[in-house]
Amino acid sequence: MGQEESSPINESVPPRSLAGRTVEALAEYIKSGRAEKIVVMTGAGINTGLYANLARLNLPYAEAVFEINYFRQNPEPFYTLAHELYPGKYRPTIAHSFIRLLHDKGLLLKHFTQNIDCLDREAGVPGDKIVEAHGSFARQSCIDCSMPYPEIDIKRHIDAKTIPKCEHCKGLVKPEIVFFGEQLPADFFRNRSLPSEADLCIVMGTSLTVQPFASLPSMVKESTPRVLINKERVGGIGSGADDVLLLGDCDDGVRKLAKACGWLDELEALGERTALTRAAESHIETKDKDKVLEDEIDKLTKDVDKTLDLSRWLDQRIRNEKGATPPPSSTDQHQEEVGNLSHVFVSESQKPAVSETPVIPTNPSKAVGEAKVNSGQREDENDQTATKDTKG
Picture 1 (cartoon, rainbow, N blue to C red):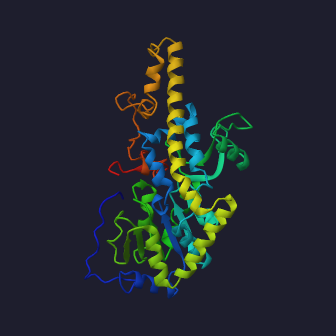
Picture 2 (cartoon, rainbow, N blue to C red; picture 1 turned 135 degrees about the vertical axis):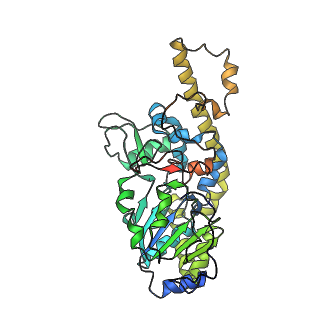
Picture 3 (tube, rainbow, N blue to C red; picture 1 turned 180 degrees about the vertical axis):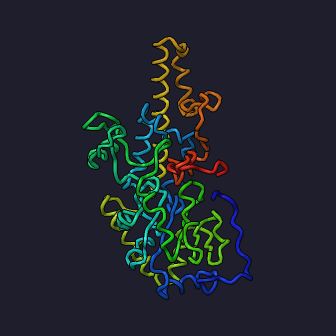
């Protein structure tokens, strides 16, 4: 299931479970009590600000920052980005609050997410209701011995943009987000069949290009209604007898559904409380955080660029010391490379021939969003790692 265009079902074909393929009919289905076990599946599209602004970094082959082999050699670029990605800098959206509202009403069976930012947790969705398919910043451990690492300590390192080391074996520590070359969390595979138990499936803000996550909507029963709240049709949703399409902005879509259900006031109040709580915790007014975001992204761009260029320079120096490569002709030659990250990443022509080379897309918004850690991986024969449709 990739990013193929959905083919809406012929209107002459009657729905099986809904009175019609409209938001009103969907709301009536929910209010009638027939949607008691709802699964929600989300991607980067439910976030406003975070991934969109990181996309402005426009880093060539930015996914290398999320490759486990690259991380082992040079963790500094990842921790530079982690300083911006780490939970606490961004607030949940109305879409996150809608998932929380479903839980509060006792309707949420499980929330499957491709996002690593923990914004659903910050909105109040309990951890045991969330399957973080690509991992998240909620936990961290050593990449060598798997020893858990204290949250307070990794936060200190991320704030300082320094590299944490395992207290047990001195190995590198990273948040348990899935990098290229790593398996998806066991929790995903334990819950992968759960959509078959649902009586309603809500898909929001995802291009459904990353496998095996993209297969989840197809696992619901044929009689289970599916609603897509997204900017475009994806994953074949719209071709089922009980598929409902709410195309457009995710926050607008959940507001339409909440209004049809008679929940809009509750949703807006919940979203407002979440925003106020976040502002109080950080001691920064919400509007002030939005005002400084532009400067933060500009600074991050420079920081990542500097970090990646420094790593290249150090690698170059090591090769020079071994006599493998002649040294740069001047300091100016090194300075000219600042601001151009392409020198950090090996081109396809330079890569050794290997059987399972990831195909790295150049779209950084997807790389740092829903597909950031999995977009180039091929699904192995055991279906244990994430893959991405190369057309996406």
